[in-house]
Amino acid sequence: MQESKDSLSRDPLLKVEHLVVEYAVGGHIVHAVSDVSLEVARGETLGLVGESGCGKSTLGRAVLQLRRAQSGRVLFDGHDLTAMHGDALRKMRQRVQLIFQDPIASLNPRRRIGDIVAEPLVIAGVKDPAKRHQMVCDVLGAVGLDPNLVMGRLPHEFSGGQCQRICIARALVLNPEFIICDEPVSALDVSIRAQILNLLEDMKARFGLTLLFIAHDLAVVKAVSDRVAVMYLGRLCEVGPSEQLFAQPAHPYTALLLEAIPVPDPDVRPAESVAVGEPPSPIAPPSGCRFRTRCPRADQRCSIEVPELREVAARQFAACHHPLIGAD
Ligand SMILES: Nc1ncnc2c1ncn2[C@@H]1O[C@H](COP(=O)(O)OP(=O)(O)OP(=O)(O)O)[C@@H](O)[C@H]1O
Image (cartoon, rainbow, N blue to C red; front, side, top):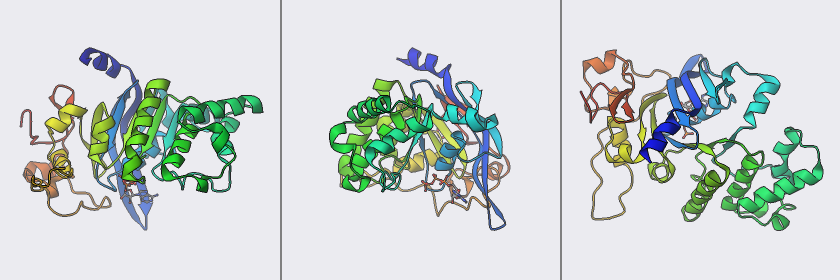
């Protein structure tokens, strides 16, 4: 198992290199993504976690070039998406799809489900209506919906969970290789989250997908990810194999996130939070380590030197001058 994972990681489908994404707002610069590098291996699910506003969605959108980066590169299957435009980019985007947080809002309320799911095929130039119809039927069936019952209906006739199934069908209809799932279950009732997560797992196995799974909820990420990347205020602070990172976090911020996972046993009190206060503004992030203003381990070095990601245990990397494991 270990061997196959390692051989996978030598064949990254997605490579993000030193990506910087900023927004200009009212004369200020929001440092949403700052020098982020990561890889997602073919067939892998990489979970991307961090508090609201840390830059997860921006990173996802910048991978797809829906938001252009200030600098850095995004390589998909060896092709530099950041250097692509027009038709070349459109063609490449068929191989990478995005599933959003709010399924109801992401479906056009005036269009019938059959047309919504067929739209990517029309854009991709599949001209034969019979072929399109068959492809839409097949993919609706794959996500557990009866094509005959749903194709002619409008989005408002469906529940949130069913709408997310429709969004997943729309994302899958062009047979993509890579899917960015941006908080795909956080807008759904708790009771149906597991169904949608199971569906994504099934689809991943059936269609040989690679996933970037963005969520602020660590319990959800733990359930689906092979590896996990943790973001804080625009920077990556830790990356590692999921089980290892959850069992033995190296970055104090990862430890803080893990402590915040609700404990099912009411007699067990959650550990005291190590961090104090709110995250600083991404308009004026702290010098050195961005987590230092909330970190109990911070010293003078942390305010001066930006910590690089370095390996603290096998395949586990942390950007910390004083990690909880490995050499200090
Ligand atoms: N279009 C935009 N214009 C200006 N600032 C933006 C824009 N989109 C995001 N931001 C800012 O960039 C930072 C990163 O936001 P982003 O949405 O990427 O974070 P996130 O981790 O996905 O948060 P959430 O989980 O709340 O979606 C935040 O400070 C946010 O306010």
